[in-house]
Length: 162
Image 1 (tube, one colour):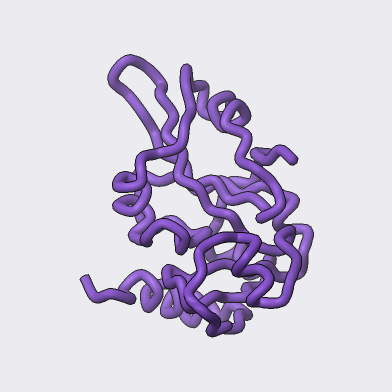
Image 2: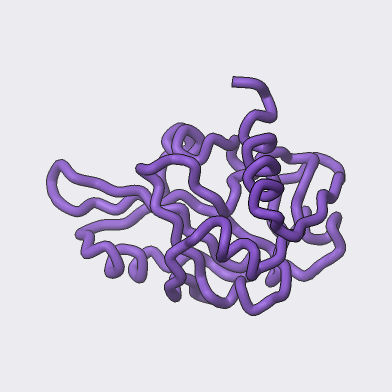
């Protein structure tokens, strides 16, 4: 796997669908607030992407890629309820990186793994476009929200808290 394979896969997917996006190069940064300043927008317009593990039973678990606005937090109780789980918590870093195919701080609001269910909070989609690190600390995308919905086909649910 090349260093930027996930980035290249994303760009190919967006181009294939004719999605409206812009590439933004910047200093290497993975923190939502800091990278939002570098890109010149409010954290509310940034996608914060977190891998969540939900226990459904003693031996069964599912993983969710939770995408919320950068000024919000992931509501673990909401995700647990949506999946009918008994527990929800943040996935370990190694599991998150394996399932997302990205290093921590660069997780995309897209899932390329069938084990990783994509759920996005509707507040992020209120903006005509939103921003995210594109599987790289030094490169971000500004992506049309309507094109995101068409290409990523996420489940849209209220999963954020202030």
